[in-house]
Length: 140
Length: 100
Image (cartoon, rainbow over all chains, first blue to last red; front, side, top):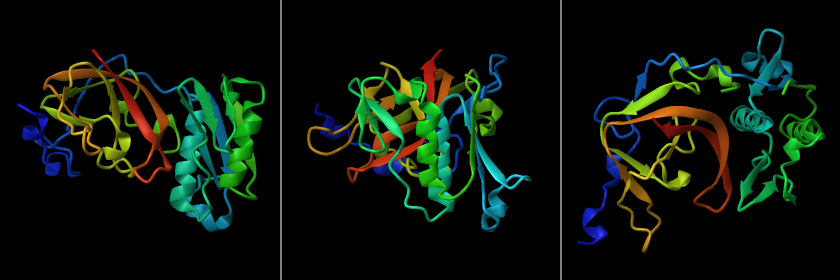
């Protein structure tokens, strides 16, 4: 028997409501081990008035996560969704032992593990949010 | 989503999910329906229990079928970079699951 006799029709996994019988439907399990997320890296962007509907009460938007990669990922998604900025490539990823960065540079070790991590993040966020004041904090 | 705190409580790292029915999955994120939409959640599953149903010998199709009754702990939530069908790069939030 060949695998071609067992083709999966595309409509078996098409998008739709999350309910029993749909592919990918899952059931959360109550579990006391679930923990509040720890957000050690944070970037606050002061948005212009024209974007006030997206801002917190103080006029800014804050991206926070357990790593700088999370922060720049959330920030890029926000910029791609809500602004007209020419969004740069994703910040970086590791492939076959090497890191590849958005500005076409590479490295053996992650630049986010070094002392200049916040500087690299700031440079990237300035591309995503040109002219907007940026505040970074890292409590790792 | 702006921060980890925005994750629903039942999808935070440390919580668990069950898949009661058979589940179709794919190796490549860009083959997964909804990969380019922030309205959908994407899980990354590490398991050796999938049955290969793809056709990668002729077309791009890495479909796998997972057995029913699988339970996972949510190990982490992070942004993942992936290659798109057009050869560019996409990025999205992925919840990584570890079998219980």
